[in-house]
Each structure stands twice: as C-alpha cells, then as structure tokens.
Amino acid sequence: MKDNDLTHCKDLTGEGVAKGITNGGTSLSGDGISFMQLVMIRQALDLQGKGIGLSRRLPAGTTMARKWLGLKGNREKLLAQVDDIIARIQRERREYVEGVHGE
Image (cartoon, rainbow, N blue to C red; front, side):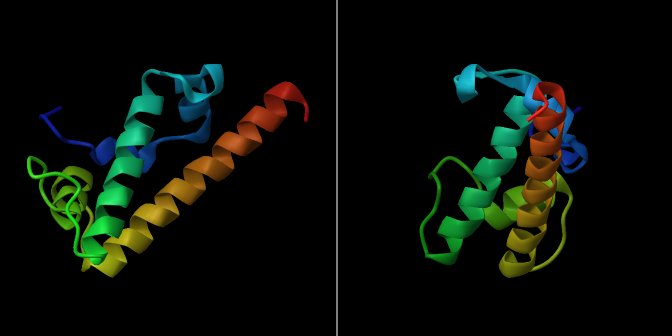
C-alpha cells in the first residue's frame, strides 16, 4: 500500500472498526485508525465548503477524497459519498456491538 492510500477505507466493516476502537474511543488500532482517517477527510470536505483548510500541510478535502479514497465528483458529491460510507460503518458497528453484548 502506498503512503496515503486509504482506498481500503471504503471497505471497512463495522466489526473491524468496533474491534479497533477500545476503551471508549481512547485507544485506536487497525480499522479504528482507518475509520478516524475517514472521519478526518469528511471534516476536511466540510471545512473546505466553508472556505477553511484543515491544514496548510495537507491537501484540500476534495484532493484527499479523490486521491486517497479513489472517489469521484465535486465537493458536495464527495461529501455525500464519504457520509454514506461513514453511516454504513457506524450502522454495522452498532449492530456488531449490540450482537456481542446482547443489548
């Protein structure tokens, strides 16, 4: 995998993310780290829409979504795609946690 190649983030599973985020979110590993990178790209897209950059040293949110995630479209479409990916992962994570803990 190349540096900044986060295309696998589109294929994260709720189970993998749940296992990678422990201690109430204070400890991240594996898919938990990748999920937080996905959330960071979402924030960059949101801030870009407000005319603010996430950082001088990072590319624009649209550039990150296109190059790192392999998505296509304008900022609004990229944001919708990233939101859909995050929503799916969170739904799967919730279902996994409820199944494990019988809630």
